[in-house]
Image (cartoon, rainbow, N blue to C red; front, top):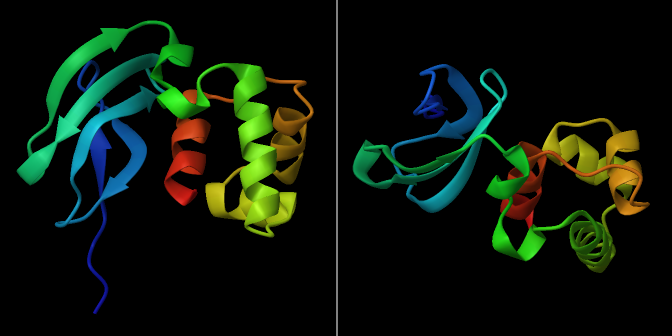
Length: 124
């Protein structure tokens, strides 16, 4: 039987984010972005307890360290995606975005959202 997924709440506005967790989830210094209040938080999520560590109103600050910066992220995503032999469409499906979003990120036409970066980082 599949375990029921729950969604982490934003520590600022208490709205449900798009980050799911189950009973075995442990997050340490995880960058969380709330699409409702447009704020970033760095959270710890051990033993089902969420602790707000830092709140910023700049969403780009919540990107994982190895994906920070638009150009670095674009190069990193393209490099790892091709190494894993994933097409842009396959990666987009895994992340839950349109394939054109991945294409635009890799061509450096857009800066990815923090939530998109977090999803990509979890895949890689």
